[in-house]
Image (cartoon, rainbow, N blue to C red):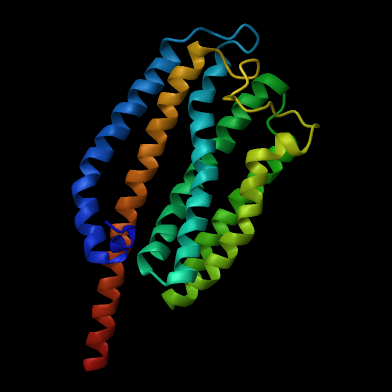
Length: 243
C-alpha cells in the first residue's frame, strides 16, 4: 500500500473519519492518566519542590511545538516537490496547534523559571530561539490568511517554513550549541546522570504520548476541515462563473 494514496482528499477523509475516534480517545486517556499521575502521585523535588511538576505540561508542549514545525516542514516539502494539496493543507492545519503549544510552553516555562531563577524571563539562547519560533508560527498563520490564492499561499508559507526550521533546530539543541545560559539540559536523556528520575520520567513519557496523540487528532481533524472548506470555495467560485 502506497502512502501517496492519502494525497487523494477523498481517501484521506474516509481514512481519518475511521481513525479519529480512536485517536481522540487515546489522547484523552493518556493525557488524563499522565497529568493526574504526574501532579498527584509524584513526590516534590528536593531542590525545586512542587514547582518541578510544571514539567508535565511544559516538556510535552515544548516537544510538540518544536516537532510540529518539523512536521509542517516535511508536509511543505512534499507540496513543493509533488504538489499534493493535502500535504499543504496539513501544514496549514498544524500551524495553529503549534502556536498554542508554543504559547503553553512559553507560559509554563515562565512560571517554572520564576520559581527557580527568580525572574519570569531571561534572554537565554534556548528561550530566545523558542520565542523567535513562536513569532515564525504567527507569521506563518498570518501569511496563509493574507494571500487569497491557496497555491501561492502554500508556496510562500513553504519557504517561510524552511527558514523557520533553523529556529526549531536551535530551540531543540541550543543548550548543546551554547554552554552558557540558565536553561537546564534535556529533561529526558539517554545519559542516566542527566535523565530525570524514573518516578518523574515515566508519567512524563505518558504525558508526551498523550500530547502527541492530541496533536495528531487535531491535525487530522483540522486538515479534514481545510479540505472541506477548499471544496466549498471551489463550488462557490464555479457558481459565480456560471452566473
